Length: 202
View 1 (cartoon, rainbow, N blue to C red):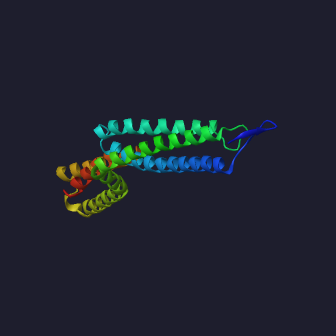
View 2 (cartoon, rainbow, N blue to C red; view 1 turned 135 degrees about the horizontal axis):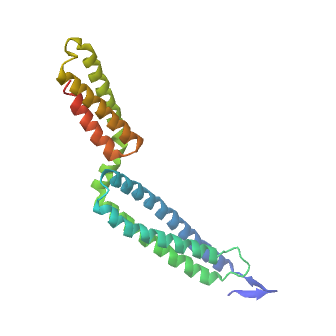
View 3 (spheres, rainbow, N blue to C red; view 1 turned 180 degrees about the vertical axis):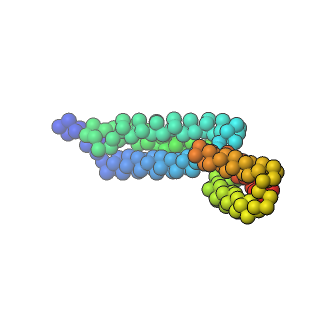
């Protein structure tokens, strides 16, 4: 049993060990939740870039808010129950850390459930965003080749249809550049598709 000696709480080894184990468990649960939340948040950002109106964004907002709340509570507990403080209540701290551990673990389970429920869509969005730079490069290369073919066709360079294709190609390249400058994955993919189509007409 804890007692006081000249104003300082006496701590038994068992109480110290229990409180430390509870705190360390809560720390591990906090770090685990943070890792899982960040992973899914990145995937949701990818979803939003491809489809800003996706219902998954709204569904994730509820889960994410639960994570924020659990994290905020953890920070409060860690501040209120400093095990190095001379007057700390080890029993109360043990209970507090055990409770927040459960709260953090429950939030992590909610994150996992959301991810498993939407895994195909989330993984597809992440892959699609990762492929966006390559898609832009391939479209730009197709435009360069098409431009080179146009320049070689000197005999028909003055034809109205050729000039029209040249203008359309220039517009398509500009649209791709604008989408890249805006960092819009959805815009880049749309512009790249258009550019491939125009280049295919040359």
